[in-house]
Image 1 (cartoon, rainbow, N blue to C red):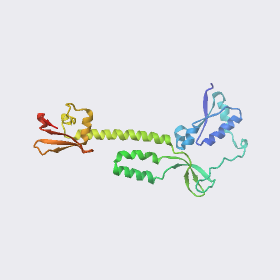
Image 2 (tube, one colour):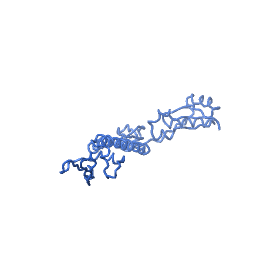
Image 3 (cartoon, rainbow, N blue to C red):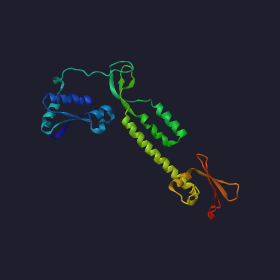
Image 4 (tube, helix red, strand yellow):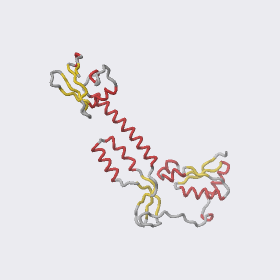
Length: 241
């Protein structure tokens, strides 16, 4: 297979199509790269170097010579199909990047999650800030979303956000358990003579309350309210259920 080389790059896919057709009309095989990716998300155009126009290496010089000439005499005066404004129906539009949701919605959800659950949950709202392909109407000045919501990116960010959230919650649990003034053996909540990692982490949610008997303490699970055990004279090893 002949090696393909780049003879041009274009910000918009339609520009690349015009250049490719010019080369094909001259008998030069021409191909596009990054076309579909940039069509879905125009913001990636600069990062990917635009839509690349590729030809066989032995036809590259000929292709560059054709592209360097004025295409106006070679092109028929055929206009592209306009994109009509969904708001007013005007064809006087141009492509732009538009968010699917109004910015007020993710900001409101962020505030609610922060207030009720904590800052760790805010990352789950990030996908609502994403934009996609849309049009700017020069007649009514409206911006309209016309593409599909970028579900791939949404799923990726949601996955990353969930993983980060779990790690933060685990780290918070470890720190809470570490700050508890329990000796290691005291965290043996099922009293089987062995303190497991799970029991150590559970101690983050355990409260120690003095019992009516002198030197005795009751241990409660703070979330469920269940009584885990009663212990007296812990240092001497005497235990009571």
